[in-house]
Image (cartoon, rainbow over all chains, first blue to last red; front, side, top):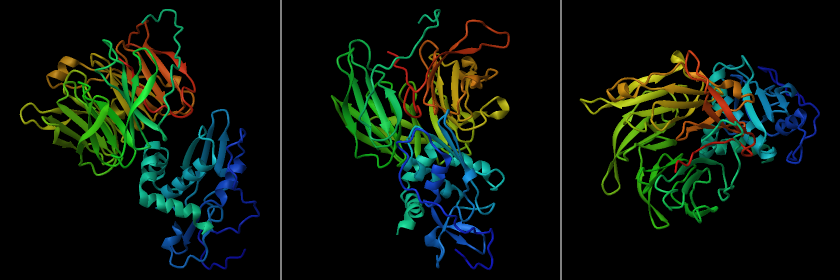
Length: 172
Length: 328
């Protein structure tokens, strides 16, 4: 898929050939990081402001001709996901497209919601921005891993609607 | 309790089902559980309700005797009985604190405390039941006076924490209020004798051996000379207080804070911890385990040490959000 962008910053990758995965992993005892990756790959759709280089909600961009997946924007890659089966923990690291990306916490919330929908609940999920990739790294990571803050945020109807739009807009 | 043989074990007696979302908090009604009165427990949940459970008969299983619903419009995060056991306060993400009164088995919401800008996270009654404290994500701590006729009046809004306040707890014997926060500190609030103004008299932070991440909970032993705090930094810390100094307006002096982090091998934030009447500390963590700690018999030169008495792994299928001893 060629994109014909004049000012691609950062580079927007062509989609790799992948099989979209929609079944959940509830039955799986052994969790393969690539399975998680396949789930997240097409799960979250965002728009991209080329001028600033930052992610936006699809609804915020007046002419969202090219809604992007997180893989295309290199926010997620196969290396983003590590699973420690012994401890029952999953670590997701994602890379916001710019240092001051205001969508970082929302992307993190979207990842949490998607994983919660697809995963056995006993798996603990830690979500962090890739080290050095965001100006407020510590603050973003702390919010994303505070279960009480996450629960309260997802009860906020405005925020919940935005998360749902990111998660389901590719089905619209 | 005799710990000599060290074979203490936690055994699940009953699993109470009914809530349809995570259970955040618990509270035993202090006027129940002895003298022939069956024990009563309140639980609060992300399903926006509070459930009341009563032991039936006195030694038998617990049954749900009431569901307090259609009042809070969001998660109920914390609940606390007044010292008399007549009132139940419930703190909610809907920014309100509800006060419930019961007659017989029925509960009625008799008052709603408003004022917090967003989620209320915790509520606590002082020892005499004359004061109530609440705290929340708006970084403030509110103190309310309990007036006749189920009226509540806000007497102070305390600013000082720089982030979300997770829990408030009154000291068991003096009217001094403690709060702990996402800003990694514990703050101590007392009334100025002359002006009746409440202000922060001490902050326990990293510089005085405090926690390095969110402090989720704090609890006092029965006499109030020891406090345990639990944190996202995976440790629990024990603090000592000079009660005489506290009563005369002095400060809460921390012991060289004793860290028990060697017991937390998997990554699990300590969400809750509580002293029982005899000084045993229970903790619940995000690794799904419940642990009991007790002061070690061997005293050391630089102060008491604590040891793990027992650990119940997979006490629940998910994070343990609250532990409460029945002190009857």
